[in-house]
Structures are given as structure tokens and as C-alpha cells.
Amino acid sequence: ILIIMLSLVVFTFRSFGQMGLVFFLTPFLLFGVMGGHLIHGTALSIFSGLGTFALIGVMINNALVFVSTFNQKLQDGFVFNEALQKAAYSRFRPIVLTTITTVAGLFPLILSQGVGAQFLRPTSIAIAYGLLFGMFLTLCFLPSLLVLSNRANQALHKLFKREVPTPEQVEPAVQELTVHF
Image (cartoon, rainbow, N blue to C red; front, side, top):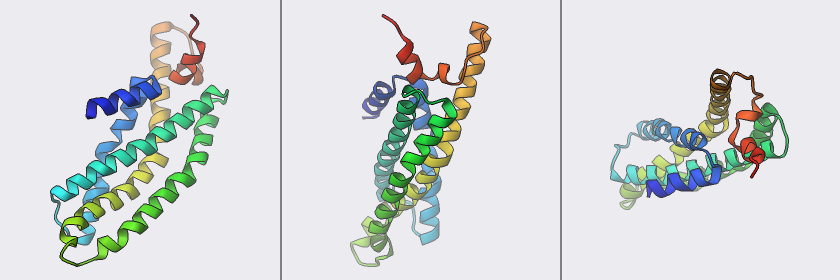
């Protein structure tokens, strides 16, 4: 399944670098998952792991939509910083609202103390707190990674091709537009 996910992301972005940035964020979700379990005094269990797998899917979806919007803004002719800013503005509300509604929907289950809650509570905690942390990762950390990646690509381009490219010229979405057959 992981290979299929990686393939779909590479196919969507047409870039191994952007795929790597999206998947680089996933281990950081564990901070949110473990923090939520610590706050509620709940031990990590197999059900926490199942919630974490579901969380990874949601996080990758949020990151995919963010990077796709960023790439589209670049293809529309915006400069790098403006494209990143417009992508962040346009994705902010949907990401925040989906996070809030999901956490609000899971919160009664997180607080429940019933017999069935012992199985569903760790899953809910993993998803809710991981999603809250993932929202920060998508809206703050991912744009920073895109900037760092762009600067690294510019430096590599300058080193190997001996010319100074603009930030837009090294982005896969813009390079895709300039390929002539």
C-alpha cells in the first residue's frame, strides 16, 4: 500500500522531491499522537497505531492539496513567494475547519469512559491530537520545507549549470511547462 501511495503522489506532483517533502512530515505526527495520549493518561496500544495510520492518510491528503495548490499557482504565473502565500491563504480555512470539525466530532468519544471506549478511545486520541499537530505541520512547516527545498535546488542548479536561476525556474511545476517536444 505504501508503494501505491508513493506512486500516486509522485504521479500527482511529477516530482520525487515534493513527494519526499510530503512524506517527511509523517513521522512528526507521532509528537501529536504521543502528546494526546500523555494528556489523557492513556497507554499507546494497537488501536493507537490504527488511528495513526488513518491520521497519516488525512495528513498526506492535506499536504497533497496544499502542494497541488502551490504548483497550480506557479503554473498560473505567480512568483515563488506569492504562489506560496496564495496557496497558504487558500488552504488555511479548509484545513483548519476540517481539523476543528473532526476533533469536535471525536471529542465526546475521547472523554467517554464506557466499556466500548477502551477500544475506541486510543484511536480517537491518536487521530484528534495528531490532526491538530498535523494542521500546524501542513500550514507552517510544509511551506518552510518548500522554501528550503527551493533554495537547495537553486544552489544545485547554480553549482552544476553555472547559471543563477530564479526560484520559479527550479520548481517541477514550472519546469513541466517549459519542456518542449
